[in-house]
Image (tube, rainbow, N blue to C red; front, side, top):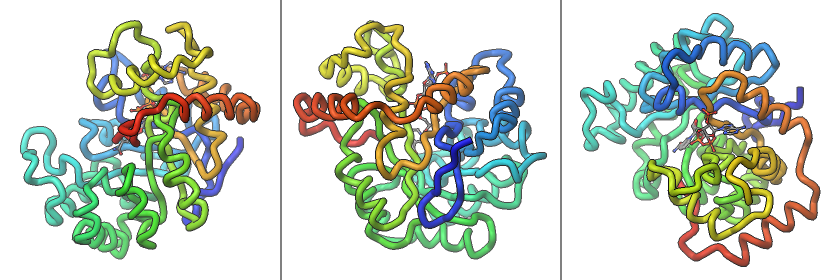
Length: 303
Ligand SMILES: NC(=O)c1ccc[n+]([C@@H]2O[C@H](COP(=O)([O-])OP(=O)(O)OC[C@H]3O[C@@H](n4cnc5c(N)ncnc54)[C@H](OP(=O)(O)O)[C@@H]3O)[C@@H](O)[C@H]2O)c1
């Protein structure tokens, strides 16, 4: 199984990781998370990403795989919707240092572990980054052994600031055929500063699969962009995710792409795509050229 170095953390990670948001937000009734995650690890894949605000995603991961904690690199996030989400949460609690510290302890309890490998800020503003209290929370958690490394999850100018700050070991950021700003804005800087890059939303939420705009606002922006980009390989709404995934994972600086899924066997399909390696150079050039021709100024990195 291919492994890539996650920047200065030195951790060796599989290119395909597991995005833990759908198992919290959109799990189909009767789906067996334990089977999905254990088979994922049995096959040698080793990255699991989650976040305190992904409903009960952390609980499900803890229940399913904490007995084999050494088999995976565990990433979680703090700061967005901290608190006993959703019951006790209000927006004012976001980024409150005390609430964040309590949230980190709650995450560890839910994940049934005494430490995560990477603790990330869950997309905070540039002002908060510069002000610094939220970074101090991460550092304190690291000093207390609750996390091995610290990272930022975000896009645009916040991501640039994070990469230049010298504080973070990793950046989690959006990159896909429908979200290419990072390719010039942040990936080269990450390589230069040896910051590990974890790609979120790596297959653009498969937004091409709907003939109408998706009901969730979350994927609507990608749906609109893809309509304008008119990639020939997505002409059909049943087009596979292979080209989008291989495009993302072939970009210089990308260590792992955490594809979100709650479907049994989905990761195996994606793993087979990844095994086919990067796309041919001329295909990558075509996807980049089309973006440069069509992308509008407000097509910035999506959170
Ligand atoms: N602010 C942040 O820090 C932030 C924001 C967004 C995401 N994230 C992280 O990044 C992860 C990935 O992002 P995401 O889940 O939003 O987007 P994504 O990985 O681009 O897309 C996920 C969607 O793709 C579907 N899918 C996966 N493989 C497929 C395949 N081979 N064919 C067809 N459909 C496929 C999944 O559905 P099925 O369940 O049917 O497989 C799911 O609906 C999240 O899970 C989360 O861990 C972080």
